[in-house]
Image (tube, rainbow, N blue to C red; front, side, top):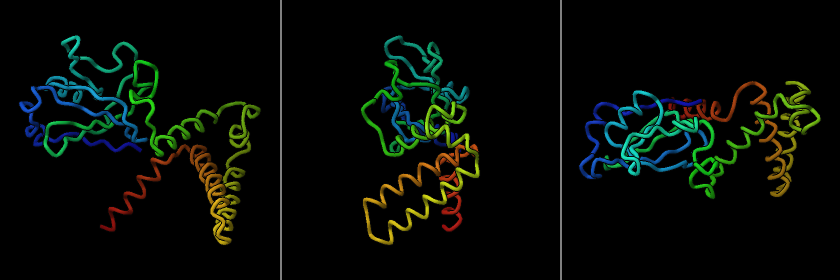
Length: 211
């Protein structure tokens, strides 16, 4: 679940364009996985276009014009949220990317860097792609084909096995069983058209209510 957050008028007013020679560095990050996708520059017009269109637009120093990421490839960066840094001379854009971000066809221009959360997001995407696949193609596809009750049963079984592994202080077995539990839980969430983002949103709401 993506929660949008845009710059306020006061934040826009405070941006220090003179400090950066009217070109604001912008770090672009995947709104769900947290993967850093790329870095670019915006002038004031590019920022205005980004905010109004919802698609990340930069100022190309090479072409000396505005450049909407994906304008030729279709791999747009849909803006979710944008934040200024503490000195008001850089921006962080959280996005929902359409396709790979890098021109080399990789998810990120920093292709060798992957966070643990980034891996979980990629795993979720893989599990989602198996929902309508042939049951003969993989264990995951067979699990989906077996129906919600069977998937839920597997989550219960793996939960018990995880708990039992903890009671005998077997760290290796606990790690293996916990991995099985998380895998089957992700399958169950996908089966119900949910994902980890929905769970994180719920946890954040509970945490905020206690503050």
